Length: 140
Image (cartoon, rainbow, N blue to C red):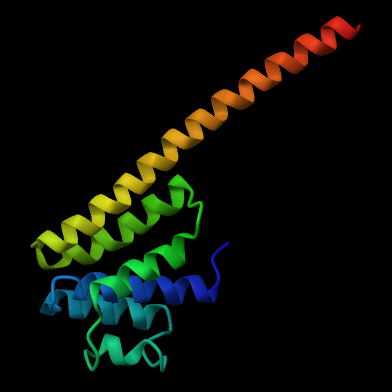
């Protein structure tokens, strides 16, 4: 479920991703302001200082926001949606900085590790179902 807090956290992450290489490019600035305006957050007191570059966002803050946004057990879909949102920002200036690429890579790794965990979980559930069916058959 998408809540106002999730939307606000997403905008914070996008701002952090723009700052992750130490400066916001003009195209990123425009992209961020359009997103913040569309989400109704352009004048939010928490967002405004970062959005209008009054305060810089440090990389560790961006990563903390990502962890807060995704939670302890993010779904593959959540990871992919976040990658897509950040990619839109990162590619807006036609240039991908090393720090931006690292952020996307970490999110991709998180998504893949979740997929493999889900696969193992699904396999385990199937085995349990098979055992249960056999037990039911024996009981009848």
